[in-house]
Image (cartoon, rainbow, N blue to C red; front, side, top):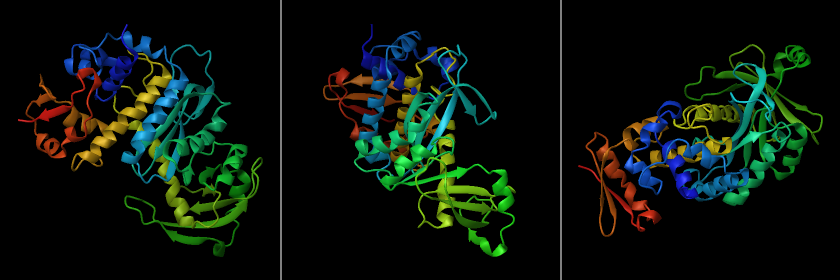
Length: 386
């Protein structure tokens, strides 16, 4: 029986390695460094991971993510004000009982999947929070949970939210509107709207230039209107934009009326960063790999997918020239380093083998902010590079 903290540190240490969980989970059983990171001499066997994850519940996962956000938000996203929400259906190849049928964006149909709601900060590219195994009845409360949990963790409310139109229904969005939060989404193009927009006179369309780097279509035109939706108290702003690369105009729906159409157009595409961030996660415990040798609880897998990439983002800010590096690149060049361990009276020294990137790591001085490790006699860690 291993301690609960050792079980969590074991899984967390494996998430920081660029190793596919499906094939190479057993290759790390005799790694003394990973065992030391988990507070043990060696890592337990593969069966220890699913056994320990199945004994957890949803409440401790939420408290773990809330505590992580409270301590890491000042470091990773100190000026965070706008967030993007997205639903991520994860494939499940087990027994279908107990799971709902959700829409699959990549396949275009409804299937049995495990639904996860992720909150992403576009500037720092950090997945701040995630809630796993949502039912269709709980899907409408995803936006309210983010609005309520963020002030409790950071002390201030979010200023803007971008999300998919299928994520939040109109009644749930109406309850968020009194909080004075900027909310933007897109609307489904109905047949009546597609007939009405081409009939507008050319003077109703206002040109705009979206001069963002790496953007293919810079010149667009838009028309503003006011719309009402069933279940939403009050009117909402609707901006029809033409010239984004496809013939039907795109319908943006938002609650602020004092924001220009250009700002509305440039804010919403940041929501696609959620899928990009989930796609570049470290390969050890990806969300789309639930049928593997190390089968974990869904809540544990989602929590580790939020924690480990956040550590990589912090490492990218500390190493010079790696601000835009992906977790796989950081793992290959900064983390996957062999060496020897030496215990001294006042610290534990890790003598790293010679590699080309050691001058950059020596300049970063990562050991200055290292706290004492409780299971190593409260000694700090220092690194020695040849």
